[in-house]
Image (cartoon, rainbow, N blue to C red; front, side, top):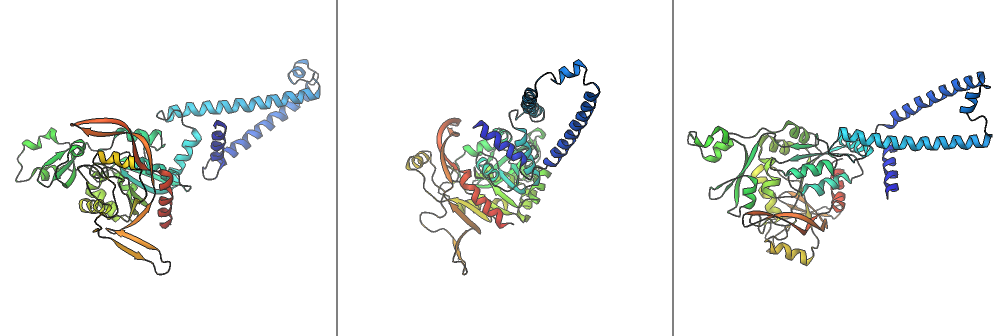
Length: 427
């Protein structure tokens, strides 16, 4: 396997598109010229000092011609081996200095990733939870060059950044936070209750959330002790809206595809879209907006929700209209379903079991193909999941518990063809 991996790395280096071979060839030509020049000088020296014992000894003139040829081949082989080992050690030392977070990464692999990042078609992925990782892996599986920019929510998990750097090789320029301010997520419930912080929102199973917004951490200026001038707590907090990252706006403005990764809708999907400038940039972008529908409902938050409920909530709280919704339509093993049912979760369906969902279907006269629309979004469906063990967190008695358990996740190998098709439609 190691030999095959080395061959693949060599193929990546010599394959078109890296932009290095022309300079390697130029360096090789220069090296050959140096060798030829040294050889001409040595030949001239040998002609002048053919009978000198030291020169004769160093050039093995005292040995038969066949042995001298074997010795030359041995020198050549060991030279190649030494050059290879030296290059490998040099590459690793260089990687430790340039990318200490990826000390074992291959230089050629990093160069290829960076090259694809700079020259590829622009795709933006928004999210903050582990659900965005399969989406990014699927994008990296595409044969064509793709520049992936990830816009993380301010409430995103720190370990996700490490995964993006170490496992996916994304650079610091590709990992973008929606805002660089110290922001706190707030949710307002139907009864007027205000929830502070993503953790509190995740733990809450109260009434439906009617309002969601980000505010800078303003406790230091004692806003709660100042005169409210007739403003509600929500209005006062909104006066301290975080500034949007210019890098995030630039990524959206250049994107051909904007992908909303699956995750908790109120703490992973929507927080970035509550920033007015960012939401406006998404709305005005000509890129296709693609939403990965969650596989399962979130207990206490999205009970009995369908795909339409998710799309309607996104549009209601951000004004963003989704163009495509990627939905799983396939089987899930009964033991897995039972496990989720025990946790209070169920499958997110395209339409409710009662069949009262507002859906429309288009049938193209020329091809006879049928397209399903939900809340204006084209449904792109297929069997796109895998069942695998994973460490998950959940709330029990007010505490966060980590447990290794089998879960359903989007399968990058099954998702990649769908993303390839959506990118092709933008060509």
